[in-house]
Amino acid sequence: KNPCINDIMSRHRDKRILQPTNSVRGDTCLLLKAKSLAVTQSSFSTAMKMVSSKLRRLFFANMLLEDEGRTFDNFDLNTTEVCKAFPHTVGFKVLPLEPRPAASDSYFLRFPAASLVRTACREFR
Image 1 (spheres, rainbow, N blue to C red):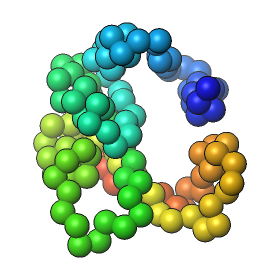
Image 2 (cartoon, helix red, strand yellow):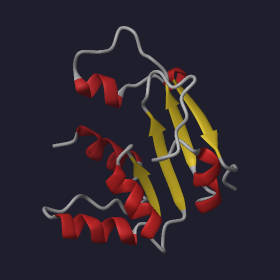
Image 3 (cartoon, rainbow, N blue to C red):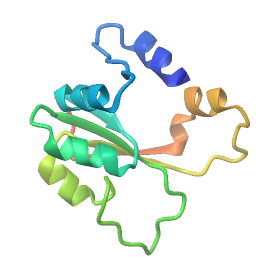
Image 4 (tube, helix red, strand yellow):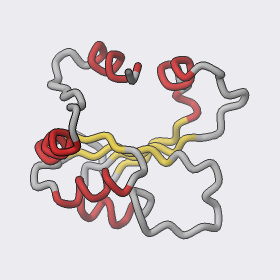
């Protein structure tokens, strides 16, 4: 089980957080109903957010450690295009963390804020 789900739920008790279902159909339905969505870099999440009529706030992480000199026109890395579609987008560039903790719980649940560079299409009010 993903340790981040319980952590997110404990930090945001006032929010309705939907848990994954046991089917692609169920998960697709959940994604299409979401008003706020945090996504990974995947073609599935890209397709789902682009066909959603309810999505208002998008959160994504750029996990690529080396992106200098490369052109990205897919997923969430073309921020100009993402911001046109979703003006309330917040992105995070993940900086290298050395040494990387061996345990995934340590890496994901205690990731230092100083290793994240936040970018936003516009600040929330």
